Length: 171
Image 1 (cartoon, rainbow, N blue to C red):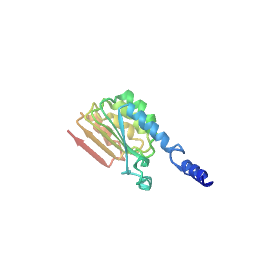
Image 2: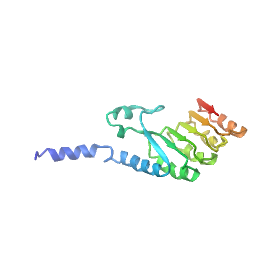
Image 3: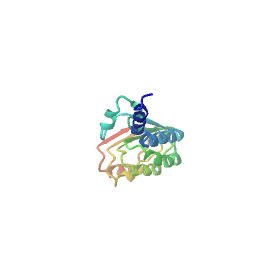
């Protein structure tokens, strides 16, 4: 065997993202999100730095997690548990709830995630007041609400999110 083979192999393995812990944390988080009823999406960021995604274009498994979608199994308790795992996704921009049982108080922990800039909800049990948690952070730029009953207080809460540039309301 070539004397250079083993040191070269070790150098390549040490340089891999999973060896540095970067991908390993995301993989563990993705598995935990799946247990809580969520699905992760890897791809090119829509709102932030795209360099990592293009750098890893040859290996989609290394592309950053940019979105997470939660379905009917997700309620406030599951979302509260999921937030600590969502924080592991450094490129996470979008969180969606499709037919989820998340209510307004359940949205508040999402406002603590520094990279989430897009939120899609519905149909669901939201009045809109939960969006108020995003008013102080100034990072939510896109909100899509489908099939929920926004109340007057909910619309006022949405109006306080000054960073919001896109608002889509669907019945």
